[in-house]
Length: 314
Image 1 (cartoon, rainbow, N blue to C red):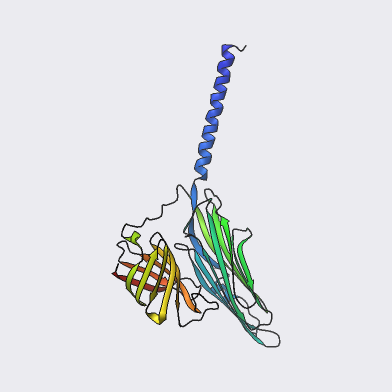
Image 2: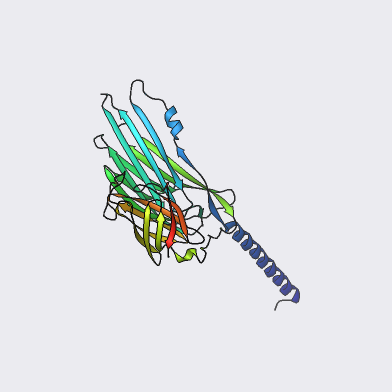
């Protein structure tokens, strides 16, 4: 049988141990609580660096890169690579690559543990025999989430990744890479950088009751009059410009989808909604629900052009 002193000693030791565990758990929980916030996007090499790179005297060697990343809405990004050169026999080659990628959720803020689906598309044309284009996205130095390779035309691929955790001072890189495998070769990287922020992630704005009514109804827009029907989160409709039609999904007062017409200034490599003339749309409904603002693009390019609308009838 233990003495009263021994019992008190064991009780004190148990209390001390539980206290240490509680403090450790508290510290660990605080360190793990946080999220990733988008910081900036950089190209490597940049357009300026491409123009400073040494060129062989008397040879054709022209490289250009353009594009960007839109994290605040649908995580859309794009790179356009222009590559013109010649071989030792002075035969000229022209290669053009467009690499687009998008996500299943906005990417202004990334929350550890969330799973994000990604789709990538490579469109490629070249007059160099056997030329090939590649494109893919990855997180930090990990394996490609989604990658595609194509000799001519357009190909797409899908994948997903789980957002990793972080800590004070940590950074995260969401990397897109594109490569033209032709005479001489041209490789480009777009790095979207994130920084770790301690605390709870910001809560997304909730739509007002008026905005929650949706996009359904008749509108006058910068592309002509439009009739939209919304069923749940799905929206379909038509507009007067070149037998225009559109289809999309609504999340929190925002519509993302596609338009298609019988003709436009750009012909896409693939068909959508029965046409080779189509592009993306991204619109945001006003708080009062009586108008929207947003943009459009050709094919799978990032949204850039302006498309506005005012409601005519519910």
